[in-house]
Length: 208
Image 1 (cartoon, rainbow, N blue to C red):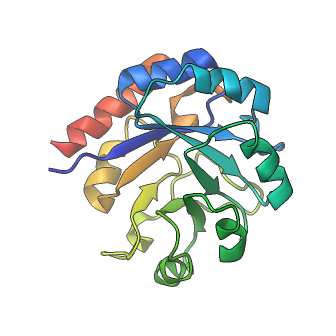
Image 2 (cartoon, one colour):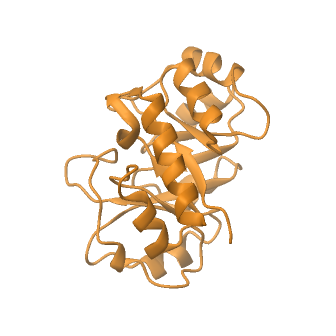
């Protein structure tokens, strides 16, 4: 049985990063989007990254940022992969010359087969809930039946996941990875170590 990878996104504190890694997270996400309650400065991101052990990926999340803005971050941080969570084109995603994945906010008429073909250079597609008012972090699930079988890209499933529903999500969708932020928080931007541990345990139980 393959193991479902886990990313804990929206890390804002060193202790939360350590809790995520200690519980078994494969990756942490740092948000560089000023309108997010989980945004971090480059300086604070440096402190979080310094506390990371080997073999844990650090993902930088950007929303419709300019190339110059992203390059400014990359000049100070050695991120492992970029997450584009806005309306970025394939050209926008490729111009930084780093591995990336593209977030898609899924609704009833979203053509995921077309997105997989269009963003062929992406390492994966991150599938999130759709909102007219927020780019992500909505805490809302979407209809997993909208995900076609055998999509041409690995799937990172996000959107409203928590320890209660992640097992069912994995059994239904069989994603490469799951991504959680609000579902393991006590308040926005502040993670709860017990919720992180319960979430990752839920993933492990589903993989059995």
